[in-house]
Amino acid sequence: MTVAELEARLAGAFARSHSAERVRSAVVAAHHRFDGRPIRDYVPIFVEREAERSFRCRLGEQT
Image (cartoon, rainbow, N blue to C red; front, side, top):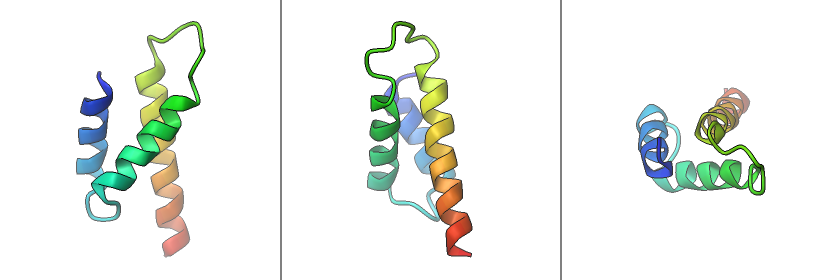
């Protein structure tokens, strides 16, 4: 999965609560957490999980 595909997937999943720009920022920030790691195969999965967790926490704070 590419970063663009991941952004599109998350933007669709969180369209009601987060702008596309917010999704992009979360994906970029999560992706940077894995800079310099030797194994890159699973980074998209970890990035998706981290961004989703961030969004869900924010939604929980709003209610």
